Image (tube, rainbow, N blue to C red):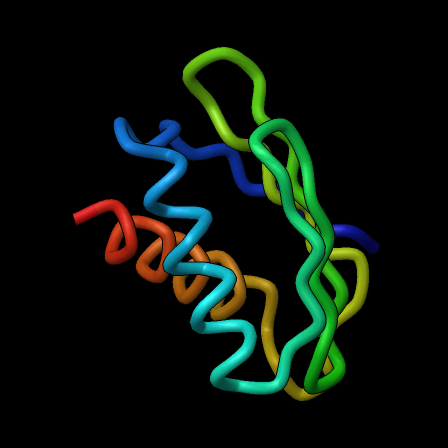
Length: 85
């Protein structure tokens, strides 16, 4: 069952994308993302995002069974907010 998280779009989203691409490369995660949408996969996870005005909707399509949905939401939320700083 997919997990969807909606967050405020960071003010400098272009910078956020660059940081995300750098992290994906550093951790050997496949990432194909643009200003309006994207997809990432690695370590048993598959996720996509879409940007709608001032919000980002992130959907996790696949996750390891041992990782809870609440952990996924918490970690993604903290990660995206950390990139926006």
